Amino acid sequence: MAEADLPGRTRVLVVDDDPDQLELVRRTLTPHFDVKTHDSALGVTNLVRQSEPDLVLLDVNFPALKGDQVLGLARRHAPRGTQFILYSATDESRLRSLALAAGADGYLSKSVQGAELVRKLTAFRSQGRVTPG
Image 1 (tube, rainbow, N blue to C red):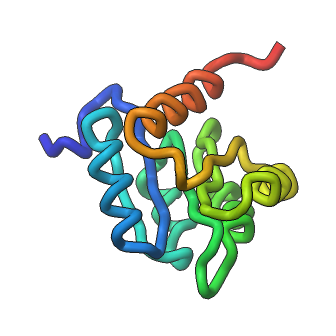
Image 2 (image 1 turned 90 degrees about the vertical axis):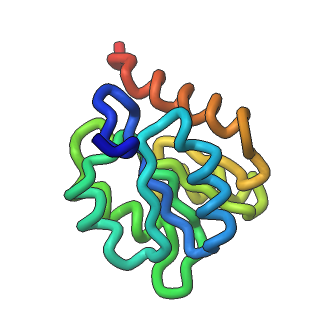
C-alpha cells in the first residue's frame, strides 16, 4: 500500500503553480497527512471529485483562474465536509477578505511553514469535526 493511501490519515490536496513551493509543502506535510499535489487551477474540480480530500490547500494566484474562482467551482463537486483553505503570499488582510468573500473555510499565509503549517492544518481539520451547535 502506498504512503498516499494509508487509511485513517487526513487527505490533503495542495494546489499551487509554483513547483518549488509545491515540493516544499509536499515534503513538509507527507509525514503527517496523505498528500496529493496539483500544479494548475485547471482540473482541480475533477481531482477533488476523484480524490475526495479532507482539506484543500489552494493557492490564490493562478494565471488562468484565481483561487477564489477555483474554490467556488470545486466546492460544488467536493464531498461534504471537505475544507478549502486559501493559501497565499498576499497581504494577510487582503487574504482574509478574499477567504470570507469566497466562502473558504480558512486562510493561511505562505509564510506559515514547517511544524506550524502541520499544526494549523491539523487544527483546521479538528474544527471541521466539531458539530455546529
